[in-house]
Image 1 (tube, rainbow, N blue to C red):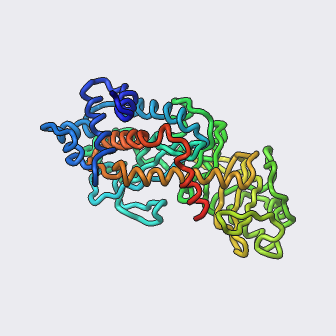
Image 2: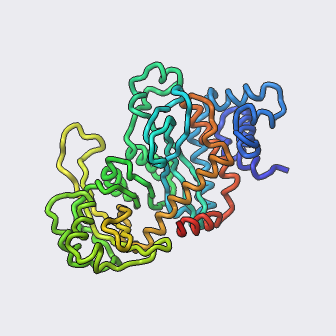
Image 3: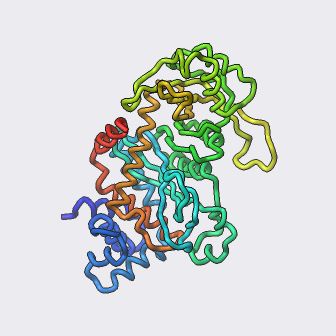
Amino acid sequence: MVDELTELCQDLLSSLPRRDQRRWGLAYIHGLVSCRGRKSIQNMAALVEERGADQSLQQFVNQSPWDWRPVRGRLAERAVAALRPRAWVVNEVVFPKTGRHSVGVEYQFAGSLGRAVNCQLGLALSAAGAGGGALPLNWRLQLPRAWDGDADRRRRTYLPDEERHRPLWALVLELVDEAVREWRLPAAPVVADLRHCGDAERLAAALHERGVGYLLRVNSAFTARFGHGSSPARRSVPVPAALRAAHRLPEAQRVSALADALATRSRGPVAGLEGRAAGGRSSHLLTVPISPQTARGPLPRRPAPPRSVPARLLLRWPAGQPQPESFWVTNLHRRLPQELVELWLTHAVADRQLGRMRERFGLTDFEGRSYRGWHHHVTLASVAAASRVLGRPGVGELVRERVLAD
């Protein structure tokens, strides 16, 4: 009788052209699921009990030319059917390294850690289900600028010529375009943390132009023109006089300017704003229409007139504090502030799932150095995680409750 893991692998690996590739793919995934301790090639090969299994697994994941994209596309189809996604969530994943020769490795700042480490930085696009589960479906490797001109490291890691450093917002857009335009996945908001991205305005504009909903956490330097645009927010909290005064700021400003205006023009830090309890702490949730400012084109060669894109700014303001603790930007005009905060929790749910993949399925245990090998490994790790996630609605509810309590 074919077990569930074997059935899943036979389906997801059906695009691999050779029988031996499919066989070693199943063995690799079985190793990620069943091997105790570090998911090294040697430890996983021990489960096969066949002479030369370590060399075969090594060749399969690092050198074999099978295409990982159809595997991810088929995984996405099954994930959509099982999870009924309420959001497409983008998370940074840190792959710690000790050397400097693995593809994309560099001593670099990792936003999710808040410090610089020697690592590879990956981006995962996850489906966050209506029942609380999450599963990464697609991946990108963030290449540091130093790799663009390092011919020796590029050659040693078999890095394709077209693979170059791209800004974070552009990589997020690539992930979304592949999911929505190529895989034709159902519409759902994109949720991402862009506090360490200098061009979040560009991503907001690009998603808006594609008709894709989004909820992006941004930093206080996010630039926008405050005021009622062509798509005013609905079902929002009442707007006090201090906020109406801030709307009259004549030029595009950092979103911190709105907070400054509220703090200096009202009797208290947030006097007159409706408050809600968030995560057990007393916080005010304020939403206001804005128009993020961005230059025309993805990478302009010369300065261009700014465009206005209708959106909303959401601030979470702890009671008694002079400044907000969080800024989000969204084009989901019909959502209440508390509904947006609930949607943001999908980011933490997806991040917890990636953490479980590190602990249980060897996500960051990959020892190979090649570009192809990295993409093969993260794809197979996603399949291994799928064997525990698909068909189990509601697995994220405990995670959600814990996040609400944090």
